[in-house]
Image (tube, rainbow, N blue to C red; front, side, top):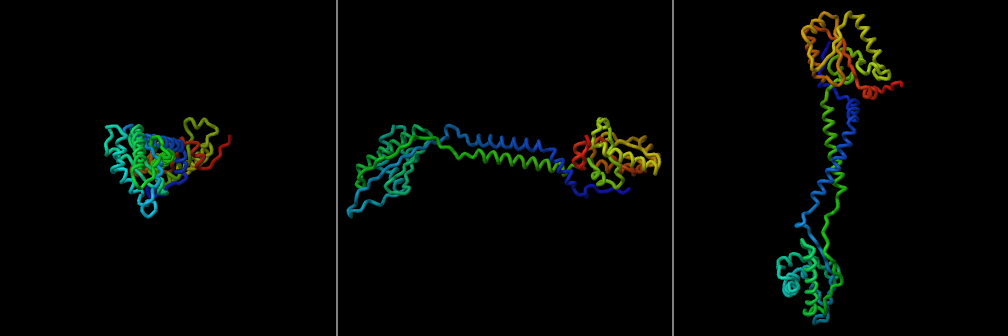
Amino acid sequence: MRERSYADEGMDVKKYMLCLLGRLPLLLTAAACGALLGALIYTIVRTVPESEREYQAFAKVYLDFAADETGEVYQAYNGYTWNDLMAADPIMDLTLAGLSADYTREETEEAMQAEILSDIRLLTLTVTTHSADRTDEILAAAVEGLETYGTQAKEFIGIKAVRVTQAKLLVADDRLMQAVLVGLFLCLFLTFLGVSLYYVMDDKIMVAGDVRKVTDVSFLGYVVGGENAADNNSVNEVFVGDFEKNLSYLQDKLGTLQLCDLEPDKPFSAEDFEKMRKAKGVVLSVPYGKVHAAFLSYVIEQLCSQDCMLCGVSIRNGDEKFLQKYYGVRVRK
């Protein structure tokens, strides 16, 4: 008997994929939870406290320029000029005159933005504050101040608002779907990674290939036991004949064999070793999916130390559906 180093053996990809498919409900649940978590986090982050919400309104103001000494209309006004003009006298004074005393010059200046988008005759005035009422009041006062300024400044024939909007809550870009997808794929990936690492590191004995990674003694087959023995449609019925034939052949060839059920929580006693030494050979029955290859390797070393000749290994009480898929066996109904 030659012991093998199971750590040096390659991974059973088919076994890994079948185990992974068995965790498909877990992966789908993780994906759904991730999507829900992504939506929840996005909603929490996107929900702005009342005191920090911003309201915005704008006005379109038509500028009717007068002609200068040369007969040309004034061209010196641009977006930067209007921002300076709105914050300076006399326009700021005219704006503040239309507001109550609780409005400060700094607040009003910070709230306003004036820009020329394309036509120099059309000014866009935008007001943004943390209150809808204050936004509307500042905009109305600024428009009134501009119209009054248009009647006073020599550069203008007149200034008139052509459109004034009401304050609306500024809403951030709706990226709920992106948050849901990010949460879904992130949780799915992390769960898949965790499950994959678990099965890559898991060395439980489930199929004949797992036994061959530990030792080169004969794998005698799958043993029917417990509830499976009464199930005529059990996939183990396909293998039970092989086990019995292999066991009978070894008994005819070697003589009396000692059949031992290996339990991870019940070590062999001195009496067990004595019985195994007296027999012509030992057949270990390993419970499906309950014994690690490392533990089986340790047990084989103990048998060797006790001068017990291991001549065969079997697996008992296997998962019928898993074995059917793994071996591609179709059980007759």
